[in-house]
Amino acid sequence: MYPFWQNDTKTPKVDDGSSSEIKLAVPVFFFGVPYRTVYVNNNGVVSFNVLVSQFTPESFPLTDGRAFIAPFWADVHNGIRGEIYYRETMDPVILQRATKDIRKYFKDMATFSATWVFIVTWEEVTFYGGSSTTPVIIQIFRFPLHSLTSNSCPSSLL
Ligand SMILES: [Ca+2]
Image (tube, rainbow, N blue to C red; front, side, top):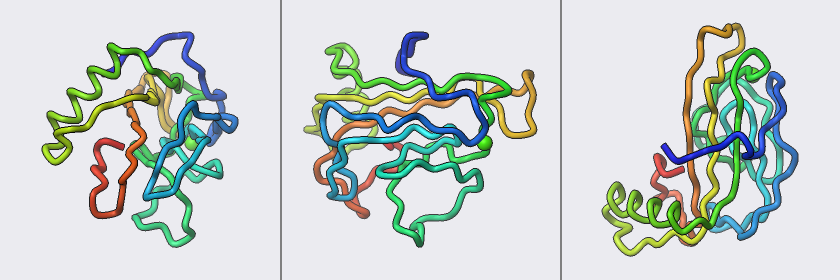
């Protein structure tokens, strides 16, 4: 787990909600397309170009062409419990750790070197119909992978 703090930006505490459009310090290349903004969506999706309020997951590839990363696509309800945090960082300690993690877990990326990281954390959120006693936690982090393709995309990295 990467560190997150109470002063990270939070998404609205509302069912099926999303952040505002987040301008990134560096472009993220996703399947060869550069994106300069993202949305952090409460239902476990980080999306490009459009927010995602959809609460029922679909299998990939999506038929409508939306571009997003779905580490936790589910019907989250942070209005009942939990917070969703995000931040960009170029903290050398985080970059060093991310570089080490990627090299360790993705053997074909032995020369990878993180220069920027975007961390999203769903902390103790619950699901639609859940309660204050049914929390879960998940975190993702993302790097600008310049050669990401459908054949080389390490899904657990996203
Ligand atoms: Ca929801």
